[in-house]
Length: 310
Image (cartoon, rainbow, N blue to C red; front, side, top):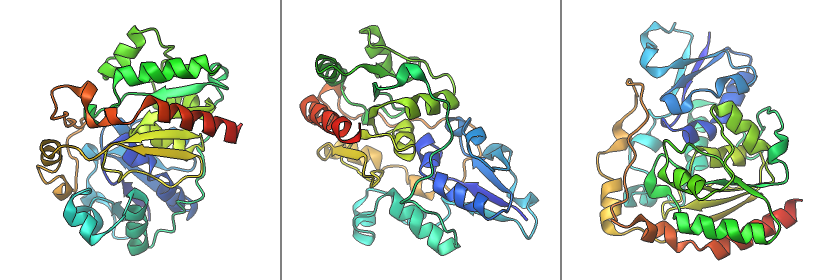
């Protein structure tokens, strides 16, 4: 008998928020396998103590499982398939639901005793060059989630002027925001693997991040985090060490683009590729909805979090 777990979607954040589920399945003593849904989820397996192995979804055949094996496909559940998250229909049916509520509901229906309140950090190697410093995570595979470059530069200046050392991580070849900030001279620490990112994130004093996988990794590792969200706050997670900011509601053209294509109906990812992110419908990203979150309020939140947690 073995357990096979496929996360709620194919992004890195979708896997990170599911770590308590994997840890719960592993704790039963039953061999547990992770079904990786895209290249974004590659590289975390070695840090999940007790995991029996990982399998790419495009190479996984559910029909090969025995009658005693159990496949937990978290996309194949009404909490995911009935409505698009963030839609008015979803909010009407599940008012106030966040990602943890969705995962808890599915776990309850499938008899998985995952603990989303008492997170168990993953083991990591301390990176001394990150100790006592503020980590900035500006990049996202979805450009529409990004905070303007001018805001990051303003925040970076404020933090350094207050005596706090800063650095950024991210992939310049995949994020124009990261590339631009590196070009402006911000200290960039390379994280070529997810394990490297885990070590760097876990070694920092506090993080500031857009809604992306490494933001969720910061939460899981217990790092104080100031998180910046769009109007759709579905992926906010309750955490004593987190301060969350949400941008105002996007224009109708952005929301229409976001809710098009019925993404909730997809329950498998049989092609091994990173998802194609939605673009901002506005022609001037620097004046996007995310720009309404001010550097001043983020700076204040960071200094308060540092003072509280040092």
